[in-house]
Structures are given as C-alpha cells and as structure tokens.
Length: 161
Length: 173
Image 1 (tube, rainbow over the protein chains, first blue to last red):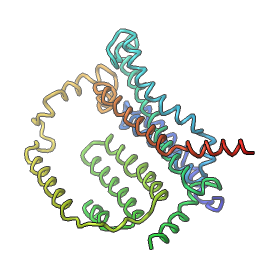
Image 2: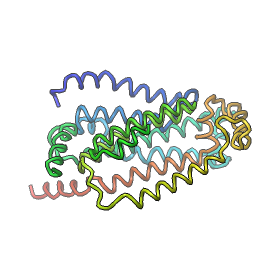
Image 3: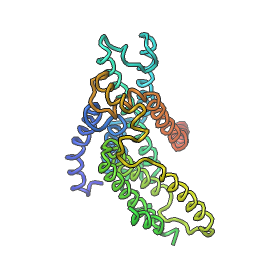
Image 4: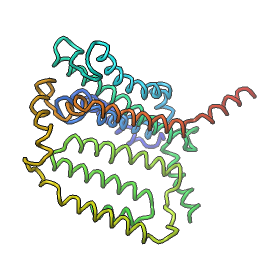
C-alpha cells in the first residue's frame, strides 16, 4: 500500500472535494439537480475511494461497522419519522405543510429532512455493501483490499486456464 | 452504445465486461443530459458508472474473472429476446412524439405540479418537489428497498461466522 505514493497524495487531495460536493448535492438539491440518492452515492464513492487506497482497517476506524448499520436504519427512521410527526401534529402522513407555522416553510423543511434521510440510508448501505465485500477478500487481515485484487485475479486465471 | 453492448456480449473476460458496462452507463448519462433529464443523468453517472462498477469488481474479486463457456446454444433465449424486443418496439409506435406538448402525460397532473409546486413549497427544482413531496410515498418505498438490500447483504455476507470463530479463539486463549 505504501508504495502507491501518487495514488495516496491524489486521493488525499480529491476526497475532501468529493465529500464537499456530496454535501452540496445533498443540501442544494432543492435548487439544482441532485438530492438524497445522488448525494448518498457520491458520499459513499468518496469513502470507497479512501478504502481502496488506504485499506479497510483505516476506513473502519473512521466508520465502524456498528455506526454504518445504525445509519442504514437511521435514514429510514428519519423519513418515516417525518411522516409520523406529520400525523401527530395533525396532518396527513408525509404532509409537510403542518411542520411549521407557514405551510411553505413546512414543505421546505419536510423535503430537506426527507432528503437527508434518503442520503443517510443510501450512503450507509453503499459503504456497508462495499465493506462487506471487501471484508471477504483474503488479504484483508494484512493491509487492505486493493492489494488482494491482482493476486486474486492471477489465482483465478490460473484455475480457469 | 451498440458497440459497447456487442462487446459486452462477445467478451468473456469479466473485468473488461464490467469496464464496458461502466462506459455504457456513462453514455446513457450523456443521453439523459441531452434529453434534459439532469437529475436522472446524475444518478446514472454516480450509481451506474461509479458504485455499481466498484461493487461488480468486488464481486469478481470474490468469485472469478472469467465467464464460463455456455453449456447450451443461445437459440431459444435469442428467439425470446428478439420477440420481446419486437413487441417493445411495436409498443413504442403508439407513443407520443418526443417533446409533444399535447401528449397525454403533459395534460394530466404535470401542469398542476409545475404551476403549484414551486409556489407551495418555495423550491424551484420540480424534480425534488415531485420526488420528496407529491410522490413521497414512492420515495419512502425506494428507501425501504435500499434498506432491505443493505440488510440482505449484511445477513448473507456479514461476518457472523468469523466473529463467532474469533470469540471461540479468545476462549481457547
């Protein structure tokens, strides 16, 4: 892993901007193209890039499995919770108008929260699926995921031929 | 795009197939941009060309990188595919012209959404309004689908066994 100096430096430069862009897509989705799904996927892509370069163990220190599993449920809970809150406040399920004094503000708030829920769930699921796949690679215990791929490939080719 | 698809069908090396699939998604995203569907293009580029490529590569790393030669001829599947394709193309003959303002889809609820949406929510992006506002039930369903997919992967591939093995090891020590 330590030999890929260019990859490490470039990734370190890129990842903050990818994360920032994901947040922009998430919270600017009301005004421009984008929204929870896209933002979640971009956010996950940044984390996956980090995992590919720095290894699964380093990534797990930032995002422990438990936190990711919690995130998967948290997004759906936020989405559903907004709906239930609307019911409790006196509107229909997912009728955001009742969430604030001004119906327009309520709608805006509701859509923002719902998109946030979507983003959290999508990020957590994507990263978790990737972590789960990467965790099954044999070389995981040594250093990281990326290193195991060329080995795997050559081993498979050998078997098939 | 046709070239990419032909190559995907012909090539047996799955690494190349995954890469070509990624290129196909990128081309599809470009087409969506041309059709003014920026949100869809965004999703296609991020999910199709980005994440699914990485996940497919991960799957290949877990399994094998070469496709097995087919055990039977492709005659029957070919006929089924051709018939279905012909039926679908026949179905498109009745579709309204692209961008036709008199098409039924532009007469039903779309004008209401376009007119009322931004006023009621204060959000200029109508796609977001429809997705999270008018069609919030559907979006909730989609999120639950994603949630279910994540839970399924965790249940199928999660490291349950490894963890219990580790625990056993600890006891032995």
